Image (cartoon, rainbow, N blue to C red):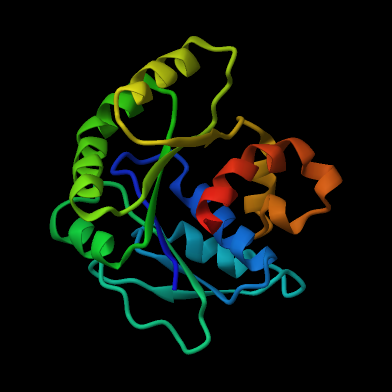
Length: 205
């Protein structure tokens, strides 16, 4: 059973947006999805509470102290949204449960430097355990200097960058309704689905 952990110790980089969209993608493929929220802010749980009954079902359950309870029978895919400041025993417990790790990363210089040690740790874990780890750029405008700084930073990490998500109000409006781009007619979010395509291919591989 795939268990995708979405992690970055820096707050405000879009972990919940990425986690809910990964869950939304899996649900759109007909999988039985559970979205676990280890973040004290419980943003993903709030999003689940906003999700309309007509949308493809995504189940939620609490994750305490970095420990994953056995999901209910029939669950095929699990996504874990993690808290800011994730480290130590809690991080190791989640990595032991994970089949893949996705790290959302914003182009802010502060976010980049705050995440460096964490990414180095994940790269080391990848080398010793083989756990797949990849980066998703979030709120990236390719026309900005910040986007150039992000590209320069990730080149030296030895971790793949799956794609970059643009800064758009689509994500804000969808979050307020418990939805993802995978819940809408493709023509309405064609540009965003194109940005998600390489990410979902990696998740499904």
